Figure 1 (cartoon, rainbow, N blue to C red):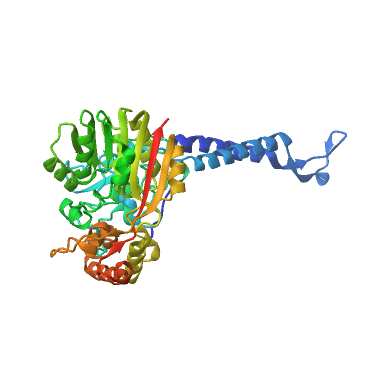
Figure 2: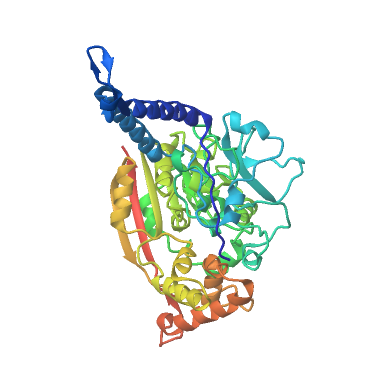
Length: 490
C-alpha cells in the first residue's frame, strides 16, 4: 500500500509571535533603507518645478540594521532547525495512516494549542479500554507507550501484523511497518491540526518505534518449543560460566533469562547471595516461576531493552550482570543498543563484572542469507527483507569500543566459531532445523502474509539443505559464532 500525505506546518505562539515582531521590524527597516526621494531646487527662495527630479535614496544606518537583524533571524531559524525535540517522537515521512497513528488528538482538547503539551498514549474519550490504542500531542495526561501494543488512527477490530498487509481501507497499522526511527527537530514538527506546541513539556521517557511495535501482540516464544529446537543452549555454557566465576555471596542480575534453566543453576552456586532473572517473554517467565523454586532466585517479566525502568535494577547493588544467548535479541533496536550497556554499568557495584555470551558477527550467516532470498522471492524488497532480521550480531571491535565508551574496562572480548548440531526433529515439527527456523526466524516469516509463510519456510530449508547437512550421517549443523565478553566497572 503506497500512500502520500501533505503536511501543514503551524508554529506555536512561543515562536510565531517573536518571529512576527522581528519580521515586521525587518520590513520597516528595509523601507527606511532604500527609498524614492524627490529633489526640489530653489533659486533665491523660488522653486522651479521644471528643475525638480526624483532619485533613489538610501540610508546607511537602516541598511546596517537590516543586515544585522536579518542575519540574527537566519541564525536563529537554522539553530532551531538543528535542535532536537526532547521526546524523540517518530516522524512519518510517507504514510498518512502512520501519521494518524502518531497524531490522534483526543476529543475535548480544543484548547491544546494555547497550552504546553506532551506526546504519548492518550486515553479514549469514552473511557473504554481498547486493544488498539492511540497516540498524540495533548495538554492532558499521557502514558508511556507499551511494547507489543497496536496503535492506530481510528477505533476498529484488532488485526495481526500479517492481516494488516491485506487491509486497504483505514487499516490498523503498526508504527514500525511504515516509519523509520529518527529524532524530530523543533522546526520540522508536523501536525494535522493546530495542536502541536513545540517547546513543550514532555512525558516519561518514550519508546522508539522498534520498542513500540517490534513485536506483535503475540509472544513469539514458547518454553516447550525452545527446549525442543534449542536444547543445546544451556548445555554449551561451560566457557561463559567459567568467566562468570560465581561466588557464594554474589548478587547477580540475569538479563534475558529465558526459561530459567541456567539462572537457577547459577543461583545454586550463589547459595548465600541473590539472583534475579528478567525476560520479556511471558511464556518463559511463567515456566521459570513454575519449574524453579529457589529462595535466592526470582524471575520477573521485563523488557531488558529498558533495564532502567525495572525497580532497583540499576541501583548499583549487583556484583555481576550476566546474559547468555539473549543480547543479540535485546540489542536489535539501534536506538536503545548502547543504553543497554549503560544501564548494565549503572546496575553494577564498583568493581562489578558484566559477563555475557551472544551471537557475534557472522552468526548463522547461511540462515540470514536464505531468509533474505526467500523473502525477496515472496515479493519483499531487499530493504524490507533485511529489516525483518530480528537479531544484531556485532563484531569484537564494535563491542569492545561500546563497552569502553560507557565506562567499562574490557578484560576479555572474543569471537569463537562453534558449529552447532540441530536437535532431533519431533513429530509435531517443534525440533530439528525446521523447528529452529520456525521459532528463531518467526519475525522473518511474519514479514509476509500467512498464506506465503510455509512456502518461504520450504524455500529456506531447500537452500540450507546442502549447506548445513553433513554427508556422513545426515545431521544438520548451523554456523554459530559466539561473542563473549568480560567487562569490569571501574
